[in-house]
Amino acid sequence: MTPSLPTLPLSQLGGPGKGQFKYDFIIVGGGTAGCVLASRLSLLPGSPTVLLLERGGSDRGWMSSTPLMSTSWQMDEKKCSSIPTVPQQGLDGRVCDMLGGKILGGASTFNSSLYTRGLPSEFNIWASQFDLPSWSFSKLLPYFISSQNHRPNSSPIADLLPPSNTASAYTGADGPWATTNPSVFTYPSSKHFVVARAGFGEGLKIGLGALVHKLDLDHDGTCKGVWFSEDGKPESTLLHASCCQETILTSGTVFSTQLLLLSGIGPKAELEELHITCLVDLPDVGRGLADHLSVYLPYTVPITDSLDRLENSPLHAIKQIASFALFRTGDFTFQGSQTAIMISSTHIPEILSEHSPYSKERPLWTSSLAEEEVPNLEILPLPFRFHSSMDDGKPDGKTPDLRKGKYNKSVGYLSPISILVRPKSTGTIKLKSKDPREIPACDPGFLTDPADLPVLIQGLRLAAKVVDGMIAGGYDVKPIEKNNPFAFGKECSDDELKAYVKKWAVPAYHMSSTLRMSGQENDGVVDGCLRVKGCKGLRVADASVFPTILAVHTQAPVVVVAEKCATMIGEEWSKASH
Ligand SMILES: Cc1cc2nc3c(=O)[nH]c(=O)nc-3n(C[C@H](O)[C@H](O)[C@H](O)COP(=O)(O)OP(=O)(O)OC[C@H]3O[C@@H](n4cnc5c(N)ncnc54)[C@H](O)[C@@H]3O)c2cc1C
Image (cartoon, rainbow, N blue to C red; front, side, top):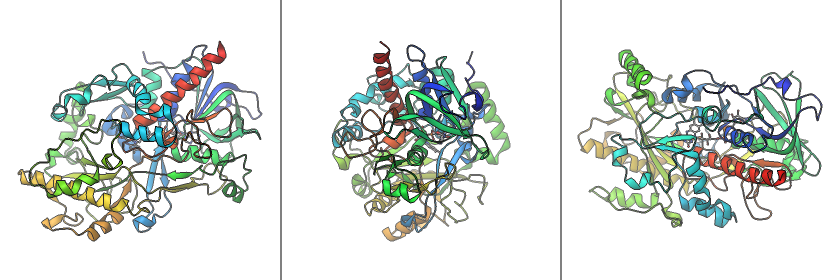
């Protein structure tokens, strides 16, 4: 039987004064990384006491375990934080929405569940450029393997994959994260990691609806605990929880950064402007915000080939619900996309000029790819309407809401998305005020580096070429005339495509690198053990510590950061207790 979660009312987890409630470890943010850590730390020998504080609630019901349905939570503000960017100069001043989790399990409860790790050479660049030898790919591979539960399957797409993709030297079969080759049902959320898979120890206590306001820091930078209150109730009492060993921030890139700044850890001048006493002057806090930027091309396809059919045909929807409920098959197992092209833009001109299928093999799975060979583009063919405005031509940079906007119900949609996965543009996170409820000013600096726009343009050209191949093969796919720059078979100039990108590009929700890890002195925010520099008893373990953004979807690497953090803490805990 699945154990129930060890949640308690907040008044039983913290008190108005210091020292009433003590824990060995406090974890701030019960999202993707936080749940992994809570599970691992509470299972350490000697059953340490672990407090996990999560701002959101916990989902009950079937939606989170139905892949296609859980992605709809991306539009639910109770479960998902919508984080507006500052106006993006690179996108003609548009404000975009970035998303983060606000629920136990975090973004893993509603993301698209694409499992990607990052290429060996990317981690090896981390290791060599930032003096982080224990973060090389060979050092991280055991964590990827031990966290993974790979279940190969047969499907039209899976059968095309070369056997090396499932080689046992790289894949795990016994871990808590279920992954498959494409098109099979998985049960991927981090909350389920705690509840049903890795389990938890008796010392774990979880506080839901708990907004952590700031860390309780001594003047020498020692973290003594946290201050928190009930979220959404400004009048509720501020509670304190003390920590005897360590506090670990896993609040996601934006909110872990905000918490350090609110606690007086960050660039001194910036903090003083807001009358926050700077306890640890760390200039790199909030610098280096990076996210992937994506732009799609709209096409129509036969309704029978698109997920749009679920909305347009009640009979089809009922059949699919039955198929999922009875056999765990059908459209509801779908999680976003079943295949992707990862490519370096340096190869695209050659591909575009070729008339025969491109057949050169390039071994990406080597430990030291030349910089220009590391893929900087991903093409994801999504078999549904991606943007509410796809037909009516009004981009707003907001989270795509598939329920809104005009569209033609007699056809299906295909939306190949080009994603810039190695952006050179980066930006900042800065506080707007001392209020922990106010979302900080997030500026990912989209397209501020002139190298980025030409790469995305190459991505659009490649995506259009792939679709051209489908048309040439006799498939009924048509560009939507109003918005697709490749409509009417016309040649598109780079200027037209630049304007298109600026008008339509949206974030891919893979924010990272604002609390960069670095083994070098006077660089970055956390060291190779994820400890905040200049502080004691304080670590960060989420995507904010990535030294550079990885060219992949970020969940698996975030899980590995949390796993490695738990191992490092566990080793110290074991030494101390013997
Ligand atoms: C819509 C979407 C789709 C995605 N699709 C994929 C995909 O298909 N594959 C993939 O690999 N990656 C995907 N990602 C990215 C991936 O999900 C994230 O990188 C990863 O889940 C981030 O984990 P995290 O632990 O850093 O943050 P989160 O999972 O967001 O967790 C942070 C948690 O901290 C809590 N918190 C924040 N502030 C406080 C506070 N002050 N007090 C208490 N709690 C707080 C939040 O409520 C939240 O639950 C997607 C992301 C999104 C948003």
